[in-house]
Image 1 (spheres, rainbow, N blue to C red):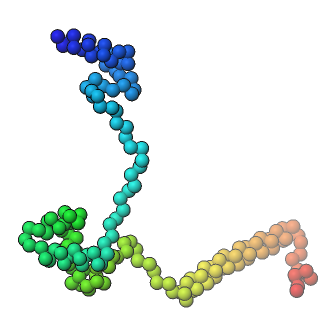
Image 2: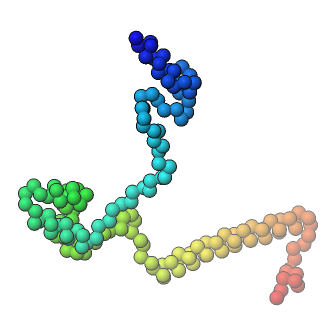
Image 3: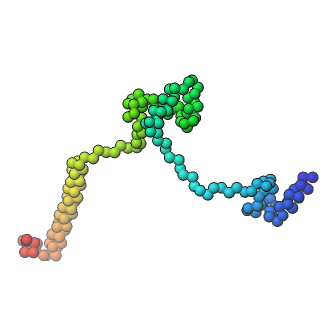
Length: 164
């Protein structure tokens, strides 16, 4: 009986299948009348970090304080918040009212711009660069003196072309 059902199913599919394999785009017999659903080709944007304004935080805290026991969970679900948000916001409110509830930028803090300090660092870099050039020039002069001695050229007094 099972063999007969399998044969009928194979005949219903026709030549679209080969043994246990189905050709691409051919719906399975178990799918019935439902059509093949193609995945959405659009790429979903990555969710960003939520930012809450101080006014919103105060509003939620006020609503949470007005809630009867057991209603805070409904408030949190409705607003899409966690209980840790309330805890953190209460601490911030106690620390400094609206200023404590203002969003804080994450990451390293920007360095204060010290114009005089920057100028000192810049001059130190330039000084080091010039020292290296001086050492290089002195080395070149030493080599030139040695080459002139080896070739028998008298390095004598400075030539007239060197004078200004």
